Image (cartoon, rainbow, N blue to C red; front, side):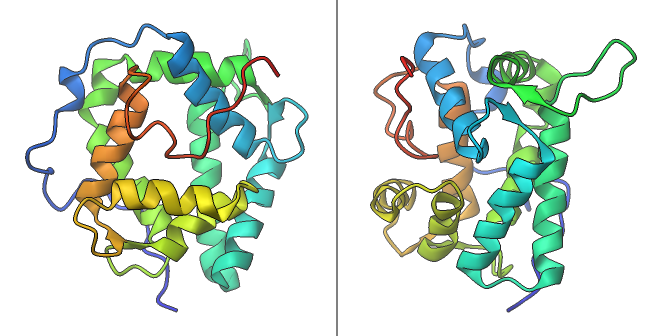
Length: 211
C-alpha cells in the first residue's frame, strides 16, 4: 500500500463553483447543528464515558488500521493526525495547558466558536484538504468506498449507512469521492444549519439527543 500522504497546506486549487465558507451566515448553534456535533463526539467517544481522550483516538485509529490493513508506519501517521485534531478542539486550563479530557458540551461549544471565527473560515479549505488526505489512505487523490467505510467501521456504525452517504457525496457516480466532492459535503455539514441538508449524515445517523 502506498504510504499515507503527509499533511500539507492548501488544496491544489480552490474548488470551483463552491460557496465560500466566509459567505455562510454565522452559526447560531441551533438544536439541529448541535445534534450533528454530538453525533461526531459520541462516535469518537469509544468507551462512552462522556469525555474524549487520547485513548479514544487511539481506539478509533486501531479500528481504521484493522479495516484498511494499514502497516505500523501509516497507522502512526493517522494517529498523529487524529491527536492533532483532538488538541485543536480541546479546552485549556487556567494555566493555558490543554486539558486531558474534553466533555461533550465543551466539544460542541469549542466547534461553534471556531466555526464562527473569520480567520478559521479563511483557512477552511486548508483544514478540509488535511482531512481529505487523512481519509485517502492510499494517497491516490480519491476516497474509495472502502476508505470511506473505514471511518464508519472505526465508529462502530453499520456499513449500509456508509454506502448511503457515500453515494450522496459522490456527485458524478464514478465510485470515488473527489476532493471537490469532499469539500462540498463537509462544508455543508459543518456550516449549514438546515435540517433537510442532504449531507447531514456525513458521519452517520444523527444521535437521539434525548439520550
